[in-house]
Length: 380
Image (cartoon, rainbow, N blue to C red; front, side, top):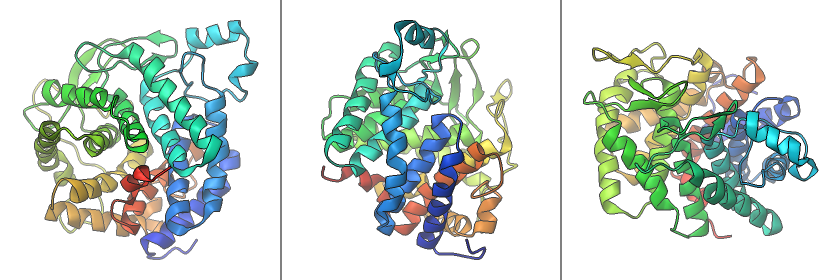
């Protein structure tokens, strides 16, 4: 890898090569890994290097083989097909497993991207697994308000509204885009609207609905991790929706949020976000940074410019966002700068792999405007 200023395509290629080299050593949860697999699928398409997709598909094959009969996916690899499990083993997974919607939504979004990239039987298998998860498992945790709980985590079955479960919206949206069927997108719209209407502080930022260990709504979403999760879910739902009143409401809230928190974190002319920025909390409110480490936050921060690009391509021109998007692509295209955010670094592998994969979402948009989203509209 050259440690100098690269173009977005050259940087994407370098990071994809690095990711392929790391895959055999990865041993942690699916969730950080699947960001890397998303990067490889984009790299294969944009760089015309099918070997990147070839490296990713075996992990999706394994993921699908481990789907439970009820549609759930465990957050960590089981390392053998579910067909080989006895009933007591499956029951124990349901008793103690991590079958959550937050990880699952992100992972199934990636699985659907793989379905878009695959052909033949593999495409059908991936689509079938995603549909089973959305229709059989996710539906169990739907709430009358339109929100969702988070499934199971460590055996806990807590089903209050959970803002970070909004990753299911990204999966609903991807399914809608790939299949052309519109029977599920309303569930994503309703969850997003629940947050926009019931979980928004007058300061212009979202409220964090957190059901661990007990329901609590006294913190604001002002950390880079949760800001990224929520913004990605909102943007993907907006992309898949044809409901004009919904889309207009999303724009109103995003404009508030951008002005209140995203833009102040990145002063004009600065190369990157201020990673030490602290949102000025209103009296009586807590900061959602609790429970996150620096490089966990930095990894998610790498993907925020790709969502700025979404706004520019699908919502409207915004000079301040464009300046920051272009600066972000440049920053992440310099391996030494990007390493400060965990990209292709010598951090623990689960941190560096996800940081690199998420950075590649921004570089995908830097290579070709709207490429990250248009990928899901391809003909099967």
